[in-house]
Image (cartoon, rainbow, N blue to C red; front, side, top):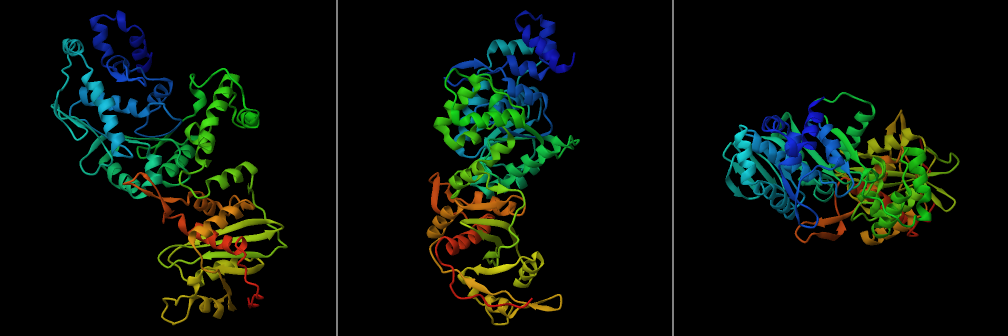
Length: 518
């Protein structure tokens, strides 16, 4: 019998154990987690903490670094806080920390999970553990959402961590932090993670919050390594995914939505997820209130979790329809149709280029390119090498700005004069997109997305930009500002906006394009 099975056997016989058996049982952490601590349940009642099926599955598969993609209400932060408190009580000089996405959550976790669990330890329990050789420490400090114990151990919950060393760090709702506060997420990775020595514990948990940021990138890489059955080292993250359909309580008697039958069929045929009628009824009922947020809150597959709309995204509704209609496709393109380009030309930022064709009433986005720190000659070379049969090239009004090369010419004029590529002069003739408000451009983009089709591979980065283009978050007011967040997604989204102003806004220049040499 392995250690976990031995601990479970003791838990099952807890009321009939002899003092010697209790002494042995208390040496197992799983036994202590199941018998020693109390928490508040959803009704605010004091109950014995008993790990649920997902928490036990995670406990048995723990690595020194773990990343948890999950459905709502599975209690992994509760498990980690009780586990870290236990390590503080039964080990000397153990330091644990928890990072939350806001101060209110940090206070709640400390007061209602850690402090409540510690305060609920009875005098009888203390006396019993003393009789079998354990002396529980007492706090010498209980302030600023932290306990410091007289055995040198400590546990703290905050919105950040830098300095000192930790044996265990838990980051709650890291996806939300990455989405709303990218700078804070970076500080966690470069600061808090570095405070945990290799081989010690880092646990990240969150629901999915769009296809961007550290949480998304770590999840994708950890899932890839899991699928390839790669052996993990101490710096690799172990991937854990807990979908809604593994929970027994997510099942009711009721009606099954006819509209969801194809979805349930796909889960069974493509992902081998066979749902009972009661599970289908629960999902049908829950989706009525959550709508498109259902897949984020209660995902069935990891891929599905990250494909959902991003809160605050300008184009969330449009991409919901795009995925539903299957308008992100394998490689395609009409070789007989002209290819147009729409640019966002950056100096300090990236330059982004969309390549597209007009096919009937549809706009086919066949390619995307983005780079930074390069001059126009670099992008002319990219245009040349791709070898498309080009129509017009569209750029914003700042193409008329003077280039920083010192030649005194505008970037538009430099492109028109041409660049030497393979011994020939290659010219780019830009049409200037009329200047307009960002709000109008976003509205044109929303309308145009209704008739867009994307190449899944060549436009992968551009699609991520459009899905992640969102409003700026106001930390003080806890709401979104009515203006775009300027981040990595902005350049690709801005280039697309210029495309939409041209195609949807009726701003296509009517003059004939200049014939260029190649």
